[in-house]
Image 1 (tube, rainbow, N blue to C red):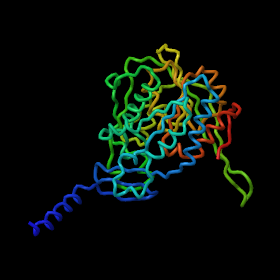
Image 2: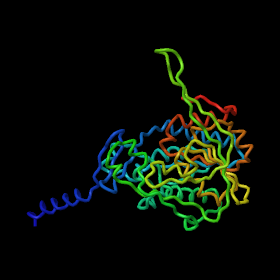
Image 3: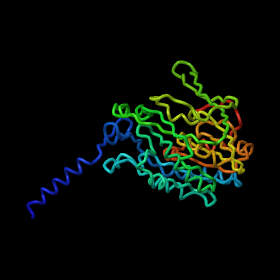
Image 4: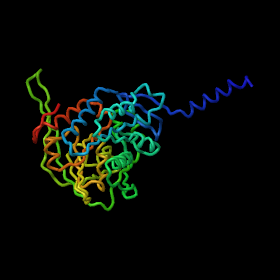
Length: 349
């Protein structure tokens, strides 16, 4: 029997090598998993627990500033938390401990929306894009479902939505990695439009403006935001097959403050404070709230205290992906929103 052991071990080793996913690291630290049409590009995570603590602190501060409102915190995992092979774990920090660090420091009157296990349960489904750094609309749907349970509001089954498909989608990870394997592995971008729900949407559009100032060696570029007047618009934007901006089907992207009025009459008015991951959340909640207001953590020129009062906000959801929740700029922006005076122009860094 002993003489067969090396042969068995060799066969096991060959089998493991054949079944293991190919993995490599490319430009900007992007991790590529698998090959061919199923290649997945993953953005690594750099942990900063101090910044995570500060993020929990600003969520807690909003609860103190708005004691009558329900305040929730949803820290959204990135794809690396679910799809990074063991052989590439050294190229990224673990996300789950960092998420737990934030949630553990929320005050008792802030409601955590824990979606890690929710997403883990659906990891075999297309809940994250392979060629883009965002989650897919299906992942946002499952996260919104979990939030609705915490908020104790109605929520529609996925069968009540019309699935729409943008074919041959290659998202931001081609730009980030510049690896042809990503460009040559397009995917379907599937999003969901609620059926039989009447709603109207308005937006304030922000525009970035830049100008060179100073003389010769001391010249520098300054940039600022300008805000439009509110206008009606279609919440969903159409894109043709192959368009790399398909994720912008929701509200046309980040450069808006969006307000949606639905047919629901439950007195619940939701404010979502988000980065681009949060763009895919609101349309899942058109049957859950009377109004939904969406504010980005980079683009907002109003005073938050006035905004909450004017719109009678009853619920505030922080919905940031972990990379943004670990950034001091996110905390600084939410802090500034509480004190800034309403303006139609604001200099940015």
